[in-house]
Amino acid sequence: MSQAYYDAYRFIANVVSPFVSRDKILYQLTQHAPLEWEVVAKIASNHSIVQALYPEVIEKKLEGLMPDDFMSYIHHMHALNCKRNAMMKKQLIDAVLVINNIGVKPLLMKGAAHLLLDTFSDISDRLMVDLDILVPSDEIKRVSNKLIATGYKYSGDHMDFVHTHHHYPPLIKQGECAMIELHRDLMFHEQQHVFPTEHAWANTIDITLPNMAEAIVLVPAYRIFHSFLHRYLVDKFYHLGHVEIRNLHELARTQFIYSSNIDWDEMLAYAREHGVVKQLCANLYVASKFMNILGLDEVINRSNIESMCYYIRVCSKLKYDWFDALDKKFARRVKLLRSKFN
Image (cartoon, rainbow, N blue to C red; front, side):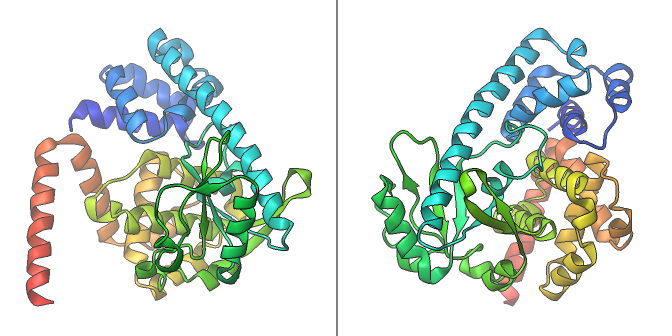
């Protein structure tokens, strides 16, 4: 990494954050070293956030300060994702109606939930791959068979998933642009003690979809918590010292829209009870620094020196190749030492 990489990373975070003013972005563009726009484009693509840049650039009236080819690129990616997400939204509503018709109200997870909520300012803001839907474990086979009866089929030969995995094999349908993953649990079996499926079902709110389809989603606090667990623990981002701008953006937007409905006390208490409060506080601290998130002051004040050190580690990995290599070497050494004593 390099200083140019770090500057581009911070610029992207500033642009997509609802808490960062146009003046602050102008200051970075005019008072700091010129941005390397190829680096900005590369980071935005790698962090799955490029499609969210265009509406924010227009909203903050920054288009005249950016190269024409960069504006054309983010405009094109925004338009493509807008069209795709609109198709996915229709597909999701149709699938929920099918599930409702057999008396089941599904829980929409991750991106599937955000497609039907007002978390983001634009339907194209979030890049999505599939539609994750949680249904009661004792109903999952019936739901799967019903979707198959409407034209879906399993993607690939993964029938071992049926009995061993936390979700069924992905379902695909000709003419539809996304896979559907039916989940019996939110988390892998190894992480279910941290966020049991029963606890998820008990912390939901109802949403009404077009065509009178009905579904539920996690309350805002647990949407944040689930996203945190999925990326920072399951995908090992915390261990790697990697922070994805897409996740920072989602957290910032959730706080911006639902701040009065987020019970941070409950979330921190739950994280502490399940042994992940250190990682959660570090994630919140980093997000507050990169996205200037208002309303997290009280939460951050409860964090400790470990959160600050984690932020320094993240920034150092963005700025220096040598730090990243040293950090990986140190992590391997720690892993070897732990294996000797376990």
